[in-house]
Amino acid sequence: MRILFMGSPQLAIPSFHASRDIGQIVGVLTQPPKASGRGQKMTASPISREVGQWGIEAMTPNSLRTPEIEEILRKLKPDIAVVVAYGKILPPNILTVPKMGCVNIHASILPELRGAGPIQWAIARGFKETGVTLMQMDEGMDTGPILLQKTTAIGSEETAGELGARLAQIGAQLLREGLLRFYQGELPPVPQDNSQATYAPLLTKADGLIDWSFTAGQIANRIRGFSPWPGTYTTRAGSRLLITRARALEELNQATSGTIIATRTNGIQVACGSGTLDVLAVKPEGKREMSIPEFLAGYTVEVGEILGT
Image (cartoon, rainbow, N blue to C red; front, side, top):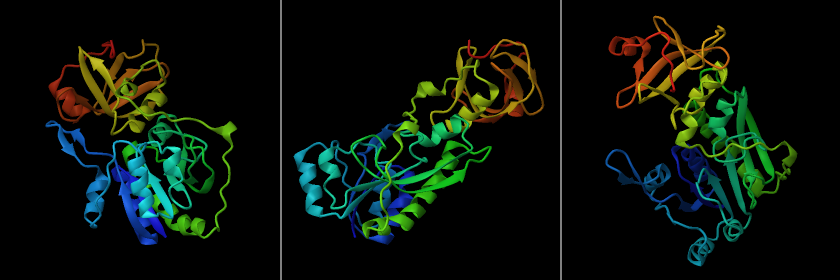
């Protein structure tokens, strides 16, 4: 089986290796290098660096909507394309290049959480389980028929970064179980029930701003779901304060949302729209992450202070 692989982030690497084990990689597409870090140095995608170790030079087109890239891909004569977090929408002319079309590993149980942020929103919305779908791609956003799915429970303290790493391994296993069967015609595609579809939009930095009128449980879920990016933050004395770890307490209070109602040995308790958030670790603007005892040793925190104002 001649496989064209399309992927970009670290999470796509296990699926690249699964594809390499299953068939012959005839080409790799990934996102172009981007400026990153304090020095804004141009950095290749994790997939680009990984495939380079295997003697493969990844293609990094800025657009797939050109006759030139279509011609290049057609000359590769791929049987199938495996797409994992590539980061670009595939236009119709590219979807038809591989003989058997394109399949996608999506980090949700479709039709739930279609879109670019399924891992983060699964946690932020309080899901108890999620999973991975092997899907035949069509022109829609994650609307193609389903080939295989596998579910997994979400840990009560699991962050999006941790869950994503786990789903990457599950996705690779799903490829090992399903790709060859699909190629051999043994895995009939099952249409999605569009009436059950939900959406998980791409995150922005603005999503990380805490709305203290939310319940403590909702805020705690967002702190895990938006870690490591975009992070979850509030403001204090005109500076940004990232909250990196917290838990929801059952304790009820009548204080205004965002009010610090107590400080204890290991946590700062903040009133929410409903319930209390026990803040366990923070990262003040321009500083490193600190446990609450470290934070209280260096900063004055007053009960009655209101965060986010």
